[in-house]
Length: 201
Image 1 (tube, rainbow, N blue to C red):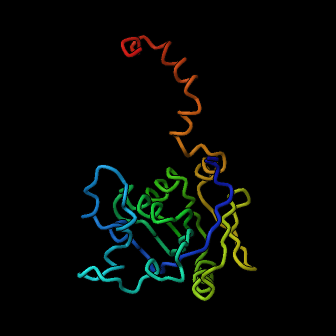
Image 2: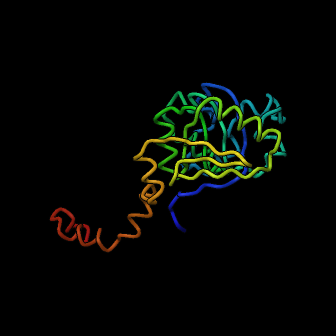
Image 3: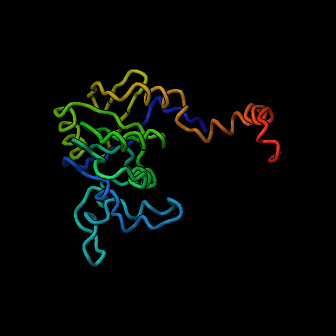
């Protein structure tokens, strides 16, 4: 699997609102887990279900957005705690990219570490895109990190993200586990030169 994230393509799910924090993305009571497996069931749980577990009106429950992979949000998305569970839940729900006005810094960094581009655009571009996708839910969205643009329908606009994150995603160096596996011989060679590793040989 190529870890590079030059293009991230999929249909969109608009989730409007400012200051959507990590506790709304995944409530803290669902984080009593050993692994991240199954967290997708709890993404936006308290605003997707009533107190009896019945679905209520929310974009993640809307059939017209089924299979969506690009989340479209507004200001300060992912604020609150630094919990990695929030982007993990979104990724496991199917999100491959996020487009928003601004992001909490730690949340955006956690997204990058999972290979999820979190790109920023202006308020007018985001609001126009949310309205367009709501009216045309099957529209394909392309986040291009090489030229830092988002394209959907006949529309295109510039986006931004920290250059270090862009480089990690474009080069595929965000996936530290894959890098370790791909360079196992070099790692072994280095470990063989370290005197304190002899006991583990």
